[in-house]
Length: 153
Image 1: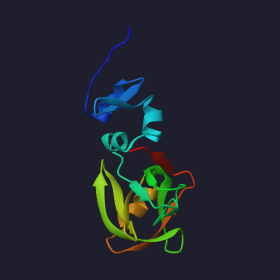
Image 2: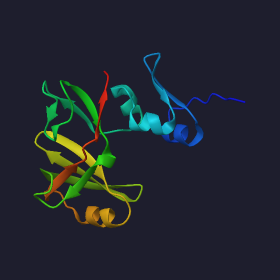
Image 3: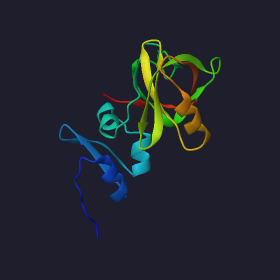
């Protein structure tokens, strides 16, 4: 037996659903399993609805302050799980703008040029490093090769 559950809470949808449809403007933006939709929301609207924060506009060459993340202009989702902080000299030179706690874990807002991205820290070593960061600290921002997902709209 199937059921349709309508919610505006993406956490609730992910907990209950085998398949998720994200709607915007009266149409379906993305449909798939929770893991598929989270990894590739498909559209800027769906990415924002799901709570993704690192949406980056690329120039005509597919570049931004983080480097080349695509080909041609457009918007990409820079997945937070593909970002990490390292000592200066490792990765792209960046500055810590702020450190906050979400769900008990540190999340750093890191600035590279005119771009800011949020970098969450996982349990263990990452969390210890995240808890020692302070605004103004210079760091290296490591960007995984497959971190960017091209979005429509």
